[in-house]
Image (cartoon, rainbow, N blue to C red; front, side, top):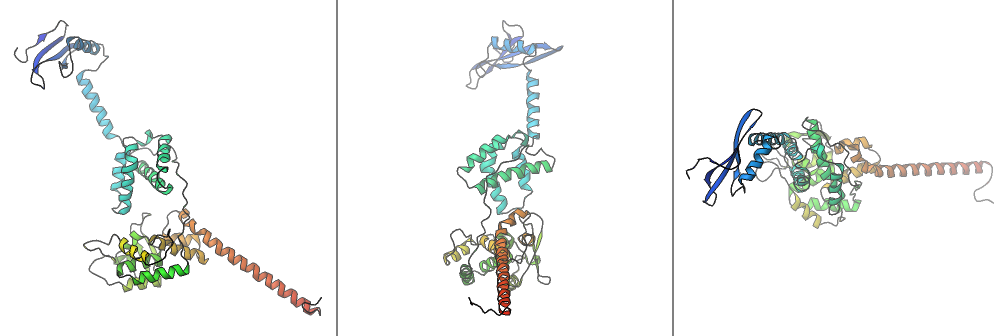
Length: 390
């Protein structure tokens, strides 16, 4: 039979033409004709083998479309196109995350959070919009992660979900999460404080290291309380030797910060030999040095540090702990020195200050007691009674 020749079936409005199947054998292709809303419609119903189409099935499709029970092929295509367009315009967690990460500066912190998203949030919530996420969904994820990961890690992951959805809300792309995310309880009060002997031994090991960049970076962590990334990214233009301040660009908290440069930090910076690089700690090629973990490992091996002490970040805690325990620095000033945006981060050191205040108060009590005792002795002498006299 010639191609494109219409052959009627016993069902009105159903016909077929001969075509070729994917296997190369002759195959009937069924079509239907019907009128709806005063308009004649002619469209394909399906192929004999590929769609398992028969004249009876084609007739059933025709009947359903006449009464509007099924959409026409055109209506079906338009509905799918509209659904696809609507899906494309939806601000899902995946789309929001892509925009959110675009706005974050490159570096270890962004890479870490990108990994957290890819490994924990993408499969769970990537295809959903924020309003489609229920509290139970997040709670199940929290419980599941808590079985294998530390509370702090789980908190970081849940915080990332909050940041992404808040980004969407702040930019009028989507609504925020309609509930408060429940997080694990995290003990943030670890201060990593070294004893005087431990600190001396550690400083001796740092001083003895052969890498001047490692020595400089670790001393600055102790003398300024700056973070590792802030130290390694520091440029010479950020250092104001005349006024005695260091500008921290794009810190963890967001906006640039300025911290004072004490004499010890000044001595470290003035001892560094400048190169053509704008960075205080230049990398081997371009840019700044990104890691000093090998030097840290050498120094830790040469010392007897407590197991829980983090060799570099612990120096930032040491800086803060010494100031807090001195009793001469209030929490607001300490917060500014550490560039904490949230005062609750600084409160981990408050117990050190409180202990100092208790000791000071105790000393006051001792002095008062001594003064009272001495006064009583003087009164006894004035009355003509000698000490220890019965």
